Length: 444
Image (tube, rainbow, N blue to C red; front, side, top):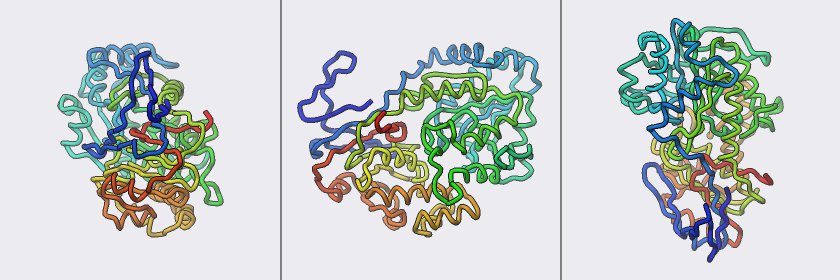
C-alpha cells in the first residue's frame, strides 16, 4: 500500500485515527537508523501489506491441512506411505520462510504416514551459494531437525554429486543433485517473493537452481540476455508468462518425478503466513498470486528521490543480497533521479570474484563477457551498473568506499551524511523501509 504523508495528514487504518510518525526507523544490519522525514519537502512511504503470520500454536495444523488437501496432487501422506525414502529440499540461509518452524511438524507427518526419520534426508538447495557450518545449519533448521535426520548441503561444483537428465527444450543441460534424484519422494519447500529476473522465487527454483550443477544454473540464467546482449524484457520481477528464465527453470524441474511442493508466503519477520501445497506449478501459481497482492505497491509516478532500507540482516548481509532491494528502489525512481540505499553489507560485497566484474566498468563490457561465458555474479554486476548509470546512488554501508566507487556509487558512512550529500531538493521522495519486499508497480 502507498501511504501519502504531508504535514498534518491523518491516516485511518482499520478505522482508527493514527498520525504517521515524522521519524522512521530504517533497519541496518542488526541495528536501526532513524530518518527525520520533516527534512523532506514532500514524500510518500511505500510499504507492502503482508498477511498476518500463522501463530506458532496453529502452524502445525495449517501445514497438515495444506498437505492433506493439496492442489492438483495426492495428499502427502498417501505419497509417503508408498515411498521408500524422501528428500526434503529447503532454501539456504539467505532465504528465510520459517524452515525451522515447518520442518518438525513435516517430519512428524511423514513419520505418521510410515516413513521413519532414517529414510529422510534434508537437502539445503543453496545453488551456487556457499555451504553452511554446523552452527548455521542449526540456526536455519533447528537443533531438533539436525538430531533427527541427515542434513546435507548441495554442491553445484561436485561432478559426483550431480547426475545428468538431458536437456531442456531451450538447450540447457540439466544436471541435478544425486541425493534428490535417488529419493523416491521429493518434497520441495520454499518461500515465494518477487525475483528480479525469474519473476518469483519458490516453486521450480527449489530444484533449479537450488539443486542444480553450476553449468546448469549458468546456462539457465544466461537467458536473461537477448542475442544482442540486452536484458530480455520479460525476465523481470512479477513476470512468469513469456519469461525465458522461468520457463527454462520449470522445464528442468519437470524432468524430476514424484515432486510434491510446499511453498510459504511470509508475513513480518519471515514467519509463514500462508501455505500452499501440491503440484509444482499449480501450488506455486497460487502462492505467487498472493505474493503479488501483498507485496506489489501501486505508484502513480516515479519519484525524484528514493530512500530505501533492505530491511536489515540477512537481506543486507552483502551487496549481492542487497541488490534485490536496490532493484525495487530503482523501480520507484524516475530516470535521472537519486537513490539512497541503506545496506550494511557486513559480509562484504558478495561472492568471490564479484568485484572483478565491476572492474570491467560498463554494462556493455560485462554483457559481452557474459555472452562468451555466463556467470551468475556477472549478471548482478551488470544489472547494478545499469541502475547506477540511470540514477545517482548513495550507498549507506560498512563497505570500503573504494568498493562502493567501483560500483559507480557514492559512499556514505551514515544516513545523515547521505542526506547532506543529496541536498534538499523540491521534488517528491519515496521512503521504502522494507525495500526487499516492496515492489513498486507503476500505473497499477
